[in-house]
Length: 435
Image 1: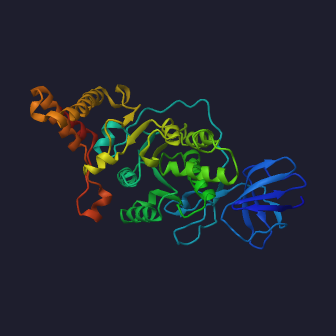
Image 2: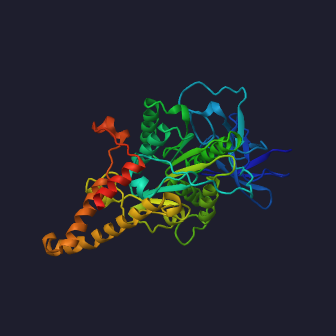
Image 3: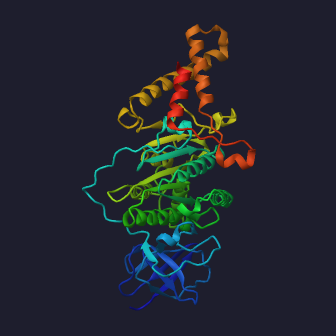
């Protein structure tokens, strides 16, 4: 096969002309510049022109250089040797430890979607206890389902995710994955230190494409983590806990790529392929007869606008949504959960039982009454309420205080011992307040 030629370079986009049969979309090609710079084929145009993305922002590329097709996609190492390690989007270790032992090491193409089975019936609804009252009560953590933590900047999405990792991983619920997509390097470092100090690295695999990376790697790192998790689910029969921070940054990276590829945005201002981008990734976070993937995804809300098109689209793929509010955070309540906007399709008698479901209906009614009474109290004062309204208002305030939680992962920062409540303890505490 004759090599192609670089015909133009614009930022991260490299156009390559192939005279004969060129590469396929999703394959990797290498530039003959002495450094084997890798490019990912994004799409093809008539006349044998391949639009490629410069994966590592290598500037040592010039027009006229030869480009050869590797015939392969982006392949990352998978297997037991990857547990306890940190990788980038291309499967290269980032933790400074010894290189992976190539013996018995397997590789998996991250863009190759595993075959789906049609005879799989959903497993019974197994509830995993998180030890966090507000989550266990309002958005039960059900094996094989998806939970989203939605909120603006600085309201505690990452801290709540770290607490969930700490509590669920310590409970020995299979293998944990963490995908850091476009977030701060400091947060990734703190998470790694927390897991290492709590001896949880032995059951955790981490992928980081933080905000210092280019949009190509930020858009690929979540897919790489999912491909690795799929291997353990399908080949090892593992149950996976998959944490992604932050799913909005994945859309943001895809949007940046769309801009440099000169694609026309959709009416919401995002890339034209936003629906398929979200759908393909979310569909891969699924369960089958071999194992399950239970995912917790944080979603950044730009300008605290919950109606943002990207936030809405991601939200539609989730079974439960935990909304973190700046107004609640300003009251000193942690986690800063907006109880009136938090919802779950899993809060049904069939999944949580009649007792839990009945309590949730009563609590939601009290909280809605609390919200309506706040405006009245601001005008006439609490003493002017009827005795029944005063009682309900007091109960609602007690419930809100009951759902606050001291984080185990914050103990070393604030000196306050962390909490852990069983689901039974949570239900009893709610019953006592309502009674």
